[in-house]
Length: 83
Image 1 (cartoon, rainbow, N blue to C red):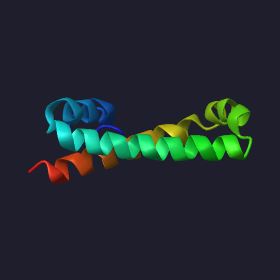
Image 2 (cartoon, rainbow, N blue to C red):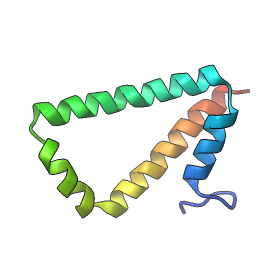
Image 3 (cartoon, helix red, strand yellow):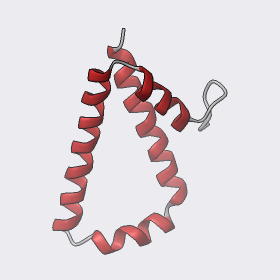
Image 4 (tube, one colour):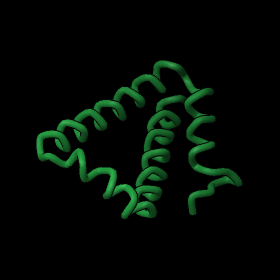
């Protein structure tokens, strides 16, 4: 399921990032960085920093699925505005 149109989602993500309108890509990446910053702050405030490494190794499949979802969301956001 992580392959679409004969390629990995991560490869399609980078194709879109490198070829779409720069301003649209910038907006989507800024949204992504903002979400990451919110999650980082939440983790720090709730003392979850040290638990993140253990969580990562215990949930590799779920994390891969989430990353694929993020790749699709960012690409969809860019492509829907890139017309």
